[in-house]
Amino acid sequence: MPARPRAGEAARRRLAGERGAAAVELAITFPVILLAVMTLIQGALWFYARSVALGAAEEGAREGRVQPASVERAHSAAEDFLAQTAQDLLVGAAVNATGSPTTIEVTVSGTSISLFPGVAGWSVAQTAVGPVERPSR
Image 1: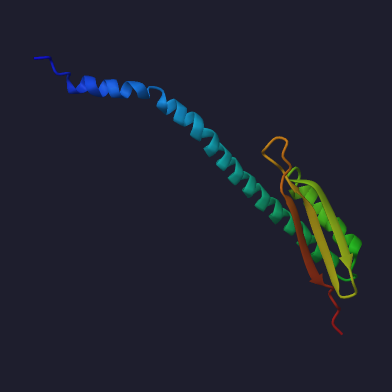
Image 2: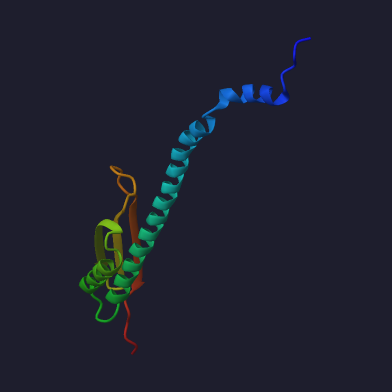
């Protein structure tokens, strides 16, 4: 009677064709996972840039609506806020302040920084509007 191969030998022969499979799986899945993590971080940077832009717009509107109301003061306050807070977070940040006899409107726009080389960040635009304060009579 021929000798039966042991159970361990048969299993080893079956698994011999799978050598290096874990390395191949890792080489395929790691870039996908890394891209997903980088995209999440890029999204977080965009939300943070939006928050900073809104803070600058609100600061500009708050300063500009105080008597005597001034569009120039609103513009300056928003730019000062960006200079202190945004630094490299908003690329090409621009402040636009407009006013009417009853309201001051400040819009801050720019682009969030990008983690991906050669790819522009996501655009950001936030607006704050406030009524001009009136002295009580």
